[in-house]
Image 1 (cartoon, rainbow, N blue to C red):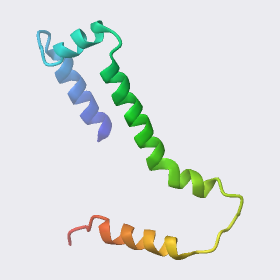
Image 2: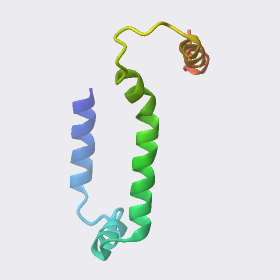
Image 3: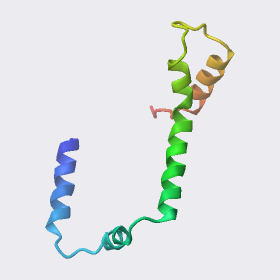
Length: 88
């Protein structure tokens, strides 16, 4: 299904020859390096690092099988409460 959707979007995109939908991206790319882009890129890199930090710390611990503690209960509870519910 994904391949069929991708093929359809690909065909629709390449069927249009005179579209100006993404013309602003070409002019931005020709301007070269900008501090705004560098700041956004750096902020995104820090956001990804902070988001993956809990898994890095848990998987990088020397203890092969740590005991199930209070933080594990809190994290599992928050996950179960905030996870999307499937409709019946």
